[in-house]
Length: 249
Image 1 (cartoon, rainbow, N blue to C red):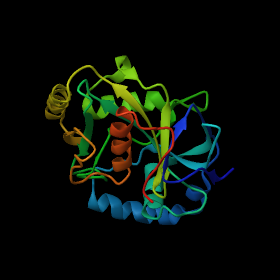
Image 2 (image 1 turned 135 degrees about the horizontal axis):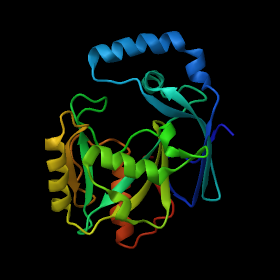
Image 3 (image 1 turned 90 degrees about the vertical axis):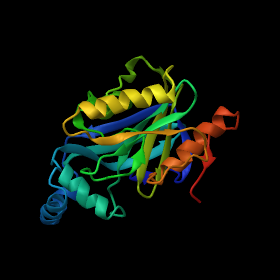
């Protein structure tokens, strides 16, 4: 299967069959010394880094609106070495975004805190898939989305209105699976709640909320994959065809 899916287009996703393989990822198995050396450099630069467990793909494909893949639990230090050279054959990263849509249709994203790997970068609250995000070996994407949003912002999206389906955007840097989560509160109200949560945390993961009110409202620090997601949201809200949209050409 390896990696067989269209790149640089937003794809509708009706089913996600990504499973956790109990075996080691070949990249981690074959690069132990390089992983350890890179981790020493990473933690010297950012001592707050924690070598927890995340997952790394060894295969992902897209057919008939379905994502099918295989991943393996790896140490975060393994992911960090892969991150330094994303063109490594046989290994890719997937992650999920709960696209937070306020009652006034603005998007609410976050800016990452200075002590994090993505310091100052803006995207929707998210994190890598972890073994806890799997049910009977199958990834539960919405569980991951809700968990990450709660951990980073304090918001509980379990009662929010979910979009009818997921979507995916795969680029050279990874594959993001996303879905709209609609709240009735205004963007300003959501931002105030997030800011209060951040202020109460001893070591928050994020610097604070970022409100995006239209497709031209692109703040400094925006991660490259975010622009097509923002444009897709506002274009599809205006009635444009959002099933498959080309970007990043």
